[in-house]
Amino acid sequence: MASKPPTRPPPPPKSAESLRTIGNEAHTTDDQGRVITKKEALDRALWAEALGWTEEIRDANGSRRQLAHPPNIKIAMDLKQLLDGKAAVATEVAPQGPSVAARVRALAVERLNALANKHTEKPDAERYLAEQS
Image (cartoon, rainbow, N blue to C red; front, side):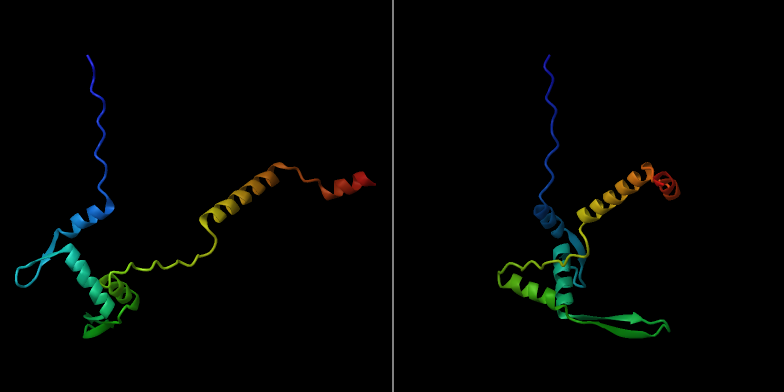
């Protein structure tokens, strides 16, 4: 009797497809009862961040005041390029100190040196001088 070959699980969905599917899900509704998708809510948040926005907060005394968030020029430029059909320019991230590989290498060297120093017998200076005379 032949057994069935093991079945493989389906491949995971591609990230872009998954994001589109999740983006089309309902997020909330507006005052008129219209469904706002997660994608639309994200778009509105991006526009608000690009153009700047204000919010009403309570300070330590409990009084209300307006807090203004300035426009984010980087997001505004990215939105403009996206609307013009251009690809967003990738920004380079400045290195923040030594790389992970360099830190691991330095740690390994430090540990190996400590191990070597621990197991090597260093001659006593007085005994060495006595033997030399």
